[in-house]
Length: 136
Image (cartoon, rainbow, N blue to C red; front, side, top):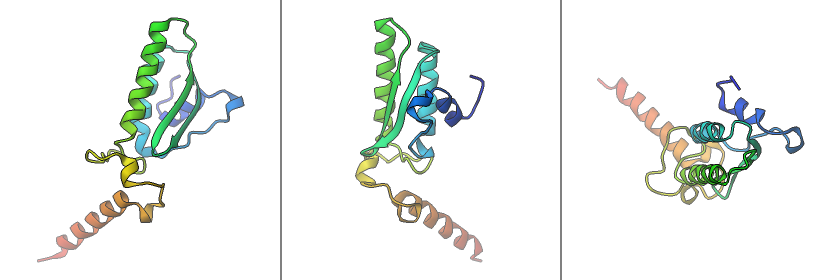
């Protein structure tokens, strides 16, 4: 796969019978990109069954083509690590860590951007900086 877009790469690995969709926001794209690169290295023919957010963390279901137990274990470890990182990374806003708190503790349910604490704080900070720039 020569495509650089992570969503396109992931969709290309999902068989038609599973439905071609990725159900999480772009804040986790860097996690998905890293995971796909690791899994592709270990098993270039692996397939994805499902990628989604559930209970505030990433869920990544895949099917390995390898028959080597050690490779399968490494792939499972990579998936578990990615799912763990998602718990501490804002799903809505790229590159925003949740400062030691689990993302699901801040956002118990997925809120629209105008009600999201992280997005709201980012917009507020931007507005304050613009206002400060107008002061003499």
